[in-house]
Length: 210
Image 1 (tube, one colour):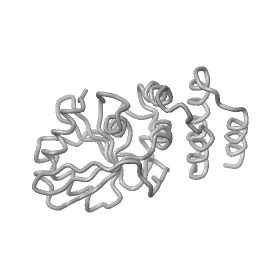
Image 2 (cartoon, one colour):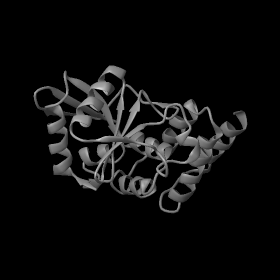
Image 3 (tube, one colour):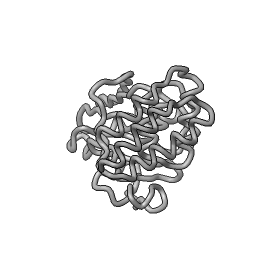
């Protein structure tokens, strides 16, 4: 686990090793920490829009001792075989999951809810999506404790638009397993939060069309 202060220090350290200013999207627990939804996370999830920026970032963390590892046991079989799966780097119990452009089959929105600059010899800029997109991507990654994180956000943000979250996935879903995981996640979440029948009907209709 890495806490807020350690994460901030790590990003500032990386900013001393990157060769030029780079930017990326922080998602998952990293975005939740930056936006104040949680205090610690198991892994740092980043999405790069530029292959050059991703390569520069990887070069920096390799200098800091991070090694690339296989995804075995982290994601489902469908996700591990997806062409847009992340590259994973670890050092001790710290882990980076690095995506290029898409999170599996999902393209991130151009809008962002927050910007965080980490200043070293160069500038490392992290953008964060809004809470509904954080939830969307947690459904997509579907790892241990993702549902717990979703419920934590929903306890703070009282007006989560579950229909919008479902539409985010349905609009880009190319594989049925994404819709199956969406429906399964919402069935769990609806035990604590109201999710209207029309949302599930929309998912079932989309499933039949793939």
